Length: 250
Image 1 (cartoon, rainbow, N blue to C red):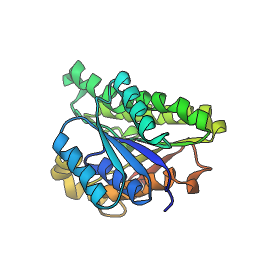
Image 2: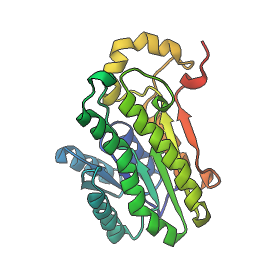
Image 3: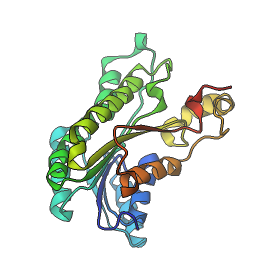
C-alpha cells in the first residue's frame, strides 16, 4: 500500500468528494482523520464503516472557518498519530446568486468556507510539515475558477484564490520536501451539484467530450496520486479532472 505509515487529514470528509477521498487514502494504508461540521451520526457511521474495513480513522467536528478550531484539530491529530503527512482541503459550499442580488452573508460564507479554511488548515500543518521536511497538501479548486458562470462570483473567486494560494505556498515550501497542488473538478455527481445537473443535464453533457458527469471516485483517484511519492516532483500545479470540459472544443 502506497500510504502505509502515513497520516492524512481531510476537511469536509463525510459526503461527496470528501468521503471518496477519505476512503481512497484509507484503502492505501493511511490513517485518516476527517473534519465535519454538522451530523454526528453520519460522521460516526463513516468511522465505523472504515473500521469494519480494517482501516484507521477519526472524526473531528469543527468549523473550518475558524483558525482556532483548525489549530485544535491539527494538534489532536498530531497528539494521536504523531504527524500530519497529507492534508486535503476539500470543504466547500455554494451560495449561487447574481451579484446584484447577492447579500454580504452569501459572499462571506463562501469565501470563508472555501478559501479561508484552506489558509486555516495550511497554516496549522505547515510548521510541523516543515520540521518533518515532508508533506503533501492538496487543495480542492474547480473549473469554475476560469469559467465565467453567471451567479457564481463568490464561488469562482474562492476557487481562483485557492489556485493562487496553492502556487505561492508551493514555492515557499518546496525546499522542505513539501508539495502543494490543487485538483479542479468539472461536473461531478454530488449532492452539491444536483440542482445544476438537473436544470441542464443534457446541455452540460454535450459540452463534456467524455459525455458523462464525473464521479467522486474520479476526483479521489487524482487526490490519491498527488498524495503519494509518485507525485514527489509535482508541485504548484492545478490538475483538472473534468472529462475534457475545459478543452473548449465542440
